[in-house]
Every structure is written in C-alpha cells, then in structure tokens.
Image 1 (tube, rainbow, N blue to C red):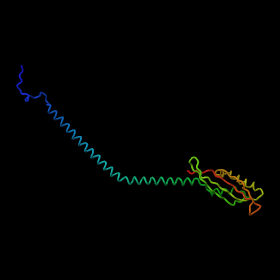
Image 2: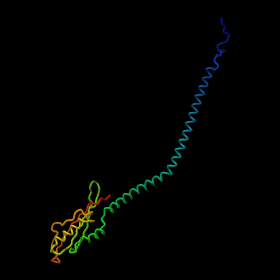
Image 3: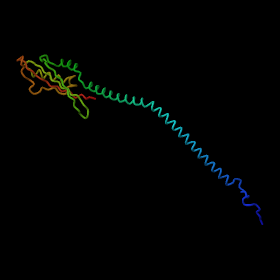
Image 4: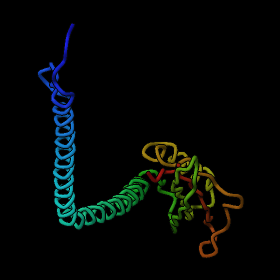
Length: 200
C-alpha cells in the first residue's frame, strides 16, 4: 500500500527540465530570432540605401560624361560617313590630267582636236552607286583619207591606258561633215563611254 502525503500543488516533476522552463526558453529564442531578423533587415536596408545613394552620386557625376561620349560618337559616325562618301567620290573620279596627256600619244598628226567635253552621270546597280563618264571629242582632218585617219584615232582607245578605262569609243551617226571654215577639211565627232566607277 502506497500513501501519497504531498498535495498536488506541492508535487514536483521528476524531470530535471520543467515544461514552464522549456516554454520560456522557446519564447525567448523566438523573440531573439525575431529581434535578430529585424536587426539584420534594418542593417541590410541601411546598407542598400547607402549603396543606392553612392550609385546615384556616381551616376550624377558620370551621366554628363556619358551624354558627351554619346554626342561625340554620333559626331564621329556622321564625320566618318562624310569622309567615306568623299573618299568614294575621290576614288571614282578620273585623273583627267593623265588622260589628256595620254590622248596626245594616240592622236594622228593629220587630226586636230577642237573640243573635248566630259560629262558624268550616277547610276545604281545592285544598290551600289557608280559614276559613268562620257567624253565627246570634236576635231577636223583633211578630207582625203579622213575616215581612215579617224578610225586610226579610234583604234588608239583600244590600247593602254585607255583600254582600262574606256568601255566604248564610237563615231555617232552623222559624225562626218564638211568644215564650214576650211572647205577641204572634214569635221568629226567621237563619243567615248567609260566603264562605271563604283562609289564605295
């Protein structure tokens, strides 16, 4: 027979850790974790705001330089395009000094040139513009053997350096006629068309 002489409110748990102590420790730990989380959140927020302020200050310093760099890049692109266009036109030109100098080597002695007229047009092929030069030559020669003399002159355009530049050299219809000043001479015309010169 076992008799319990201790009142219920005087009874103690045999466990070395009471439920109340465990509850207090759990509540304390939870509160500590909440406070720690709030502290870390606050510190992280303040650090982030500090970084934002630093980046904003840096951007205010960098933004004018960035805009100036963009403007310089745009100006460079415009000037580069202009330079490229000018170089294209330069490369597509004809060195007329050399052409005229070479011309003296193919003109027969019995022919006298009276007029040289050069024109050019711009054509586009496969989206590439090109300059096409045309030269009209006028002159006179003695009436006898006039056609032979002019045909000899035409053959000169098939030799270098003209063969590299001139696509065709022809006598147009009605190219020969009597010279109104010197009746014994005949006036002639020659049309020269140059190869297209791409403007790149």
